[in-house]
Structures are given as structure tokens and as C-alpha cells.
Amino acid sequence: MKIIMLGAPGAGKGTQAKMIAEKYGIPHISTGDIFRANIKNGTQLGMEAKQYMDKGLLVPDELTVKILLDRVAQDDCKKGYVLDGFPRTIPQAEVLDKALTELGDKIDYAIDVDVPDENIVRRMGGRRACLSCGATYHIEHVPPKKEGICDTCGQELVLRDDDKPETVQNRLNVYHEQTQPLIEFYQAKGVLKTVDGTVDMKDVFTAITEILK
Ligand code: ADP
Ligand code: ADP
Ligand code: ZN
Picture 1 (tube, rainbow, N blue to C red):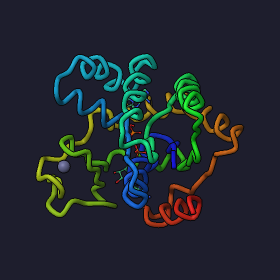
Picture 2 (tube, rainbow, N blue to C red):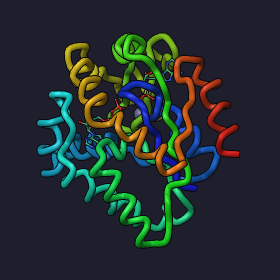
Picture 3 (cartoon, protein in one colour):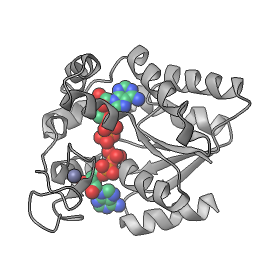
Picture 4 (cartoon, rainbow, N blue to C red):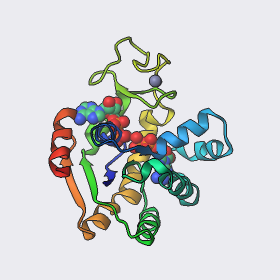
């Protein structure tokens, strides 16, 4: 099963992708997590990506596509995967489509987690991230057991640089311009499913499992 998560930054793609990955035993692949791991480790890729990410801009397609294609070529992806944060542009979607077609394969579902912009801005300010293990919390909706500390690995939680309000608005603009057209792209392929992302995260997940049945 090959699944793409669509939706604005902060819509809950990562939260849902992790639950899907666990339930169906497939890897959760987040290009944002891959970039953040590279930034943390001080790699060349990380240094390049950071310049764009801090401004709320997309990392150029050339860089992004290569890391994604390398990742999905790994053995654990044979049984499928859930992509979170890729594709984010039409050219990225076309490259993925071509790579899959060459393997006689395709995307099964593109799930759009729909949340209006007003909700997003409020949500992002409360998001706290663990840069060590990729876990995500929310100060109101998903608080960690001990304030500011990751339940899973014990590291300190941070407000991501790009989750500050001024950058969130840029990211929403970029989303509407460059990523939202993917909704039509996948609708035309007949694989688009939309879920209401404003409800409780458990209810969002129930709606998704109904689709994947
Ligand atoms: P994305 O991957 O789309 O950027 P996340 O999954 O990181 O989004 O979610 C953004 C923030 O909102 C996180 O702090 C997360 O805990 C919280 N969140 C996710 N889903 C919901 C929901 N249904 N209701 C309220 N808060 C949510
Ligand atoms: P969010 O969880 O808020 O949707 P991500 O963690 O997916 O954010 O992405 C954070 C940042 O990493 C993006 O704002 C962008 O700069 C970069 N990024 C992640 N995935 C991609 C991609 N597929 N194409 C270009 N840039 C990306
Ligand atoms: Zn952690």
C-alpha cells in the first residue's frame, strides 16, 4: 500500500502518517524529518536545506527528489510506505509518478487532511518537536508527560524555527501556491480522498482507516 498525505503545514499529516505506519506496518517517510536530521548532523544537504526552511520556503526540487527516490528504493519500502510532506510541487509529483510507472507501480491513495488556515496558525504555535527522534507534541492537544521533555527519548522539546508565527504565514502562502494544485493532480488520477482534519485526531484516524479498508 502506497499512500501520500496532502494538507497544509500543521494539518496533522505527520500525526496521522505515524498512526497509519504503525497500524499497517509500513515505513513513515517525512522529507521534513530527513532534512531536520541532516541539519542536526551538520551535513552539506542539511546546510543547504536550512537556508530555505528557515524562511518558510520549499527546498529546491532537485535536492528533495533525489533523497526521496533513494529512500523509497530501500528494502523496507517494498511492501509500501506512507509519504508525509512529499510531493509538495507538481514537478515532484511527476517525478514520483514516472519512477513508479517504470516499476509498474502506482500510488494507491492520496489523503488530503483538510484544515482551514485560521486553525493552522493557532495549532503551529503549540507544536513542540523532538529533533532527536522526530516525535511531535502539542502543548494543549498532545502534551508530553513532563513539560518540555520527549516521552520517547528524554530529549528537550523545541518550537521549530519555522513554526514561529511570521514564518507560518509564509509557509501557508507557499502551500496555496505550490502544493495545493496537487489536490487536483491526484483527483485526476482517481486516488484522492479528503478527510476533515479539524476534528479530534482519533476521529481523523478513524476516517482514514475507513478509506484504507
Ligand atoms: P503536519 O505534519 O501536517 O505539519 P502535525 O502532525 O505535526 O502536522 O500536527 C501539527 C500540530 O497539531 C502538532 O502539534 C500536533 O500534535 C497537532 N495536531 C495534529 N492533529 C491534530 C488534531 N486533529 N487536533 C488538534 N491538534 C492536532
Ligand atoms: P510540516 O510538518 O509543517 O508540513 P515539514 O516537516 O513537512 O513541515 O517540512 C518542513 C520544511 O522542510 C518545509 O517548510 C520545507 O522547507 C522543507 N520540505 C519538506 N519537504 C519538502 C518537499 N517535499 N519539498 C520541498 N521542501 C520540503
Ligand atoms: Zn524524542
